[in-house]
Length: 494
Image (cartoon, rainbow, N blue to C red):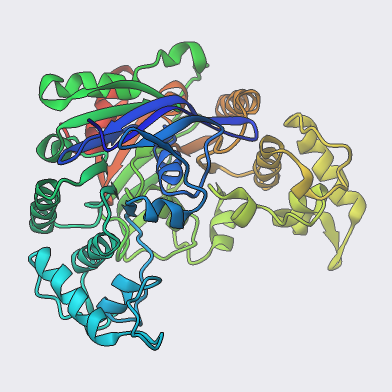
């Protein structure tokens, strides 16, 4: 009998159905792997299980009894805890304080019982076969040791259901082996474990069961030993993208931009590629692969430690975003609301921000010039707004994205970098953005497009470079593109 069962769970946000009638079971002493590409609904499910969201439809059963999690504390009280890749811990507190934060044992006078906190923390660390001193500060621990503290914190609340969300992302092979020994120990204690990972070798090593999510639906569940890896990959990515993203054929021109042995001190290294005129180069990889960090460095947000950039035969020395813009390289960020727009400002001022030299005279801005420039690109992008004077924050996500793209097109760039260009916008707006990207390529603009959505990458790209753990994991020509090939390169399952 499962410890926990979710039946027909749906979660609806404005314009998006994040989960659509999914069901999953977690069994005592077993690991269930939750698999799916970015945006498949995994994080939403975890937030429901941990009491952050309440589902619009469906029910949750623990030991066969229906239950609801009205809050995160209610989930903890029911025995559900989560260990995230970025678990919230506090560097200036001790190991013991982090473990018992929020539920510290008290003396009969109501004060914190430090003796029980430290002895309890030590017992938990010994249970995890660790000799970490519970009195040292968290800041002095390695990433792997911090994971142990997070697991100890989970066990301190007598959890029966443990969720591990990408727990191995920043660990070495030895540290992964140590973690898996702990997981086996948790299984022997009868814990039910939900293990989320993109790494198939780890999934097959540690899990008994699997559930595959795609586009918010559960598309496959079963026993891993009875299911070949190729079948898991097909379940994860199985869509006919040609019908959704018809590719407009464009005559690809000569090389425009070249990146040679490009390195960053912490985020990526030895990246080399070439971008041609009119080409859409897709950049694919899992979260943490270094894609956005690479693009931000190309735009001058961060400085590389070594490497060379060449644009139209001229070496570049990009020390700032201003240098990149002047050279003809622009960047549409993933978080358009935070990094791409001034939301309280009107549309026309957002559009003209990077082009103030064109819209001013003798050092004074000309509103008429700003409006004329904004009107030109608003019409070109089919921007839907009551007026160009309304705050850009009042627009839909799709129209906000058009403003970001429009402001950079006004600078007449040679290379445009699009980081998750259709993130968080509805299907109709996605189609409009895709059509416009195709038009830009046809006009000879060179495009780097970062996307976590395989259909978008496969449907729009002329070539795809896959990144994994800060390295290039391969470049695929269009005729060699397949969902399976890209997923295997991104996960290291060649």
